[in-house]
Image (cartoon, helix red, strand yellow):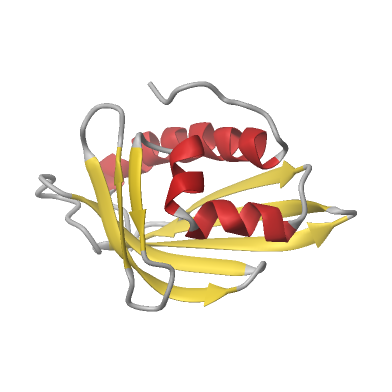
Length: 140
């Protein structure tokens, strides 16, 4: 098994604000993708259509309000990384009125580690921008 991707971000917004961007489709769309369908409950499905028309899809595994979100992750039409084949864990820790976010993405095939590391770094920067009240611009 490969080592997981771990990406950490300090966000200048409280955990409750950041958490909302992880469980509401209209808010998710502001930081990742162009369309999101989100059912925030254990076993609930999510799908995010990216700007390149690829769709990330999975199911929520764990939701701890304002503290933790765990979901499976994969891509429709991707034979080596189908929906639900990997796991993403996002932990939110209150840090002086802001949030320390740690994302851990497990079970990726070796060839997917670099592109997903790049993607998560990009998208967590966008998440931070919207959670802090900014506009990261359209997702291209």
